[in-house]
Image (cartoon, rainbow, N blue to C red; front, top):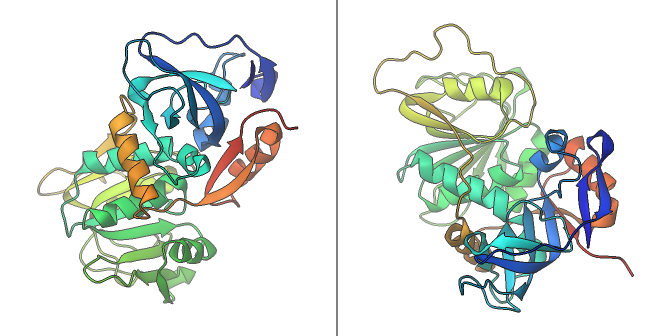
Length: 340
């Protein structure tokens, strides 16, 4: 069986690997589509040589689990688990969800890691209706989903992106009308009104410079301290986002895309009133029910996915360049299998 594995020099390469042998609670899946996550590529060097890569997959169940759990043979499924970048893979039935009729496998494969991270980090933070939620790196896969899920929970969302063109693209992807106002020191906040009665607006802003951690906002019109932060960028953005957190607020640190250290100024972790908290995130155990929920939202058109590139797994180098180059927004999904 063919698979993409960790090769010499921490580079991905094709290899012939043994067929998977499912355990009693696992289903054998023929992988049709697999998506690329930033962490799949950045942390490849941490895995032993020969490890089958990937976590997100969509395909068809070739053999149902022996213990009777999970989808039946022939079902179209999305799956989350190690070793997804292979022609066939064994997944725990607690990590598989049936893809709704009418939903393509490309979008299904794009959803597991990003969707579970967005959903579960918001659930852990617990934003109440009307609370202010800041999402950093909002044009990325996790950020874009977090923006939409927070809105569905009734939050007022501030979506932070790194560049004006990303703000405009995010707004367009969300079906929003954009009102651009020039901020201090060249920072351009893009205020977005979604245009649906009773739905809280999303403010898409470029950067966090000039935003003060008090009720007086300097430099970014309309941006005030927040109750929850879903932080995907790390480094200086993490520090700035922490400074915006209200007493009693929670920051979920779910990514570190910038690769830079976070240096907190002295005493910046002190504040009067209820304690602020910063939590790590990485709980993706038993995701089947949450994955089914996310698939249903996407299939119903209540949450949208942006596919930035849908190519062949034969061009992993091209996918890697697009993912790590920083110019691409949206998920990369690769068709699995030999090209004719």
